[in-house]
Length: 267
Image (cartoon, rainbow, N blue to C red; front, side):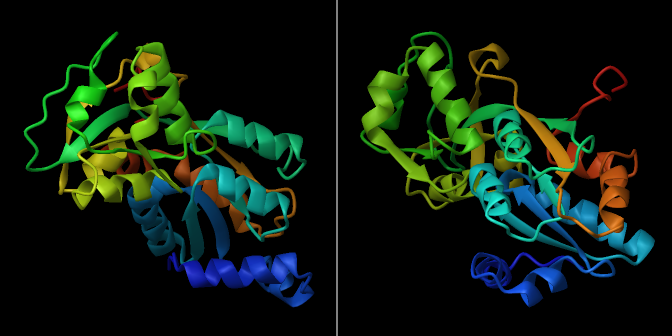
């Protein structure tokens, strides 16, 4: 069973921050569901993978999806997560330095790509490369991006635009969102003519299309690490990580466009 309701997270987080022991002990009960804090871009693939795990084992998982930056800070503040699945290395490093991860449990699991997306009926044509005219392609509209200073997708996007010489032309035209799925929604609804999202996000929404892919060397590698939190008492947490890294889970991630680390040469 998978729960993604924001109200559930708000209640648990509130209990953690207000120092309510009952809220924490219930969430971290050894026989309760595994609580997963995961990057928003993982939603489709992870929902499917966890449903398969639940069907196979009879176990339960509850998921909160948000920007990796928000999740890392919530865990640091005491939010009751068993697993942290980040969309970049930097925020996993942050969690590790904050002492919120179980030693030796961290591993890199997935890779992704960065793309320029447009509404499905858009006639936009963009050749992404050094000096490309992204400002002109916007046609007076806004560029949807996740927060460029904190959210991984936004940070990758800004880095790519800076390297390609396009950032100065669009930095005042960016519509920043709390996470990459929120940025995707602006494009999907036609509120932004273009948006920078992960390839997997664009695949997940039939109302958008990919009009260009950023060169892999224009931004840091997009890597998704996964780890158990230090305070997790759930014995199923390690088992769930094992499943998510197993061949059984691989199709759920690949179907959404992720590359499974360790499988690149086998594909």
